[in-house]
Image 1: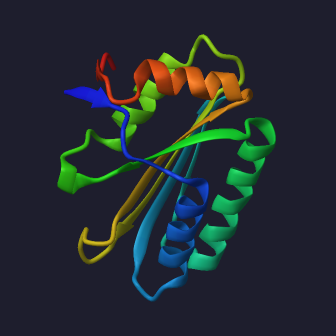
Image 2 (image 1 turned 135 degrees about the vertical axis):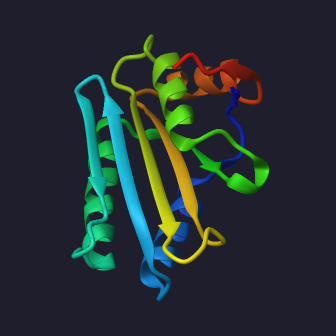
Length: 149
């Protein structure tokens, strides 16, 4: 399946969506994955973890990411559009950004425990320099790219 970088959302919209879902009564499973030159870090929302605790950890990781690479492009992944899996989008984004220094790719999934109607899946592609972000968008947004694993 080809990966298509589309459906960008603003940082404010992304944070509002995260806040709304994690502050509501609806129950979720959550996963956060960060991949960079330094390696990969994963955080999952454990059964004993409260929503506030998961939200605090997600906020801390996103703050650290912002400190390291503050020029972001955020893509929303949705099943109803038949978008590729978040992991596939993340892997292709990381592969395509290897020519840039200091890129961080973060995926956040909030998946409803009862149904998928309110799922949220975001892919943050974070750059150290604004020209890197602009170059990535010009070169790859809206263009089908093969997923080469």
